[in-house]
Image (tube, rainbow, N blue to C red; front, side, top):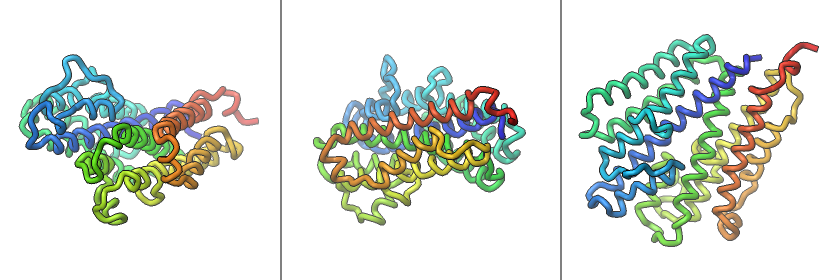
Length: 315
């Protein structure tokens, strides 16, 4: 059984890396949507971006790509910035160096140092997409190295749990943000392309549905697809598997509260139908996913991190 502090650090390391990658991808897409559009136009509406990230809009709000990058990538005082997320992930990794592989540490440290170097050089304003791609590819590399070099035991399961819990929550929140105004957008509006690209889902969606961008199909793909790794249903399946495996490896009785909550979320998505969801209250459904993720986090934290010491002692 891992020490609770180790489980905690691995969990948060994974969540913050997923959050950093998600933020970088949303910035990358939003800047693409703003090409050839005047500042203040629809493509440069950064309010969408801050709302999609669940972040407060600073005062004054960013008006250019450079100011946006400075706020959401490089500002260490902004807890939502990519640099802040990578810094916290690196600190958590540093505290559990004995549990992660040297390759994992080297890749995470390299991403941190590249971001610090880019910020110090000050040349990033001319190539904001490069900075976003550096983060996205850096996190992908860390994830690949993790899967290839770390034993897939209890520690790895905590990494999986953190990653997919974060992913389920941010994907549901992003879908909710776009569908708030969905009735105002024509079927082939560029914002639907932006939503799919923000989830790395455009190509996968087109392979399944062709390029016919219909809001109901987009919602079904991002919420209920069982095979696409960034859908909420796929993430819920991984959450349930990770929690069940952690309980097994730590000798806890099956059917604990985290497992039950994870299984309930997965089952609700397994048996969900997009027409029923959209005909009722899509916003309430997506808000419910967010609350369910928060409940899973609280239950897992209480069970695997804040548990009474007596429960870990041999009988």
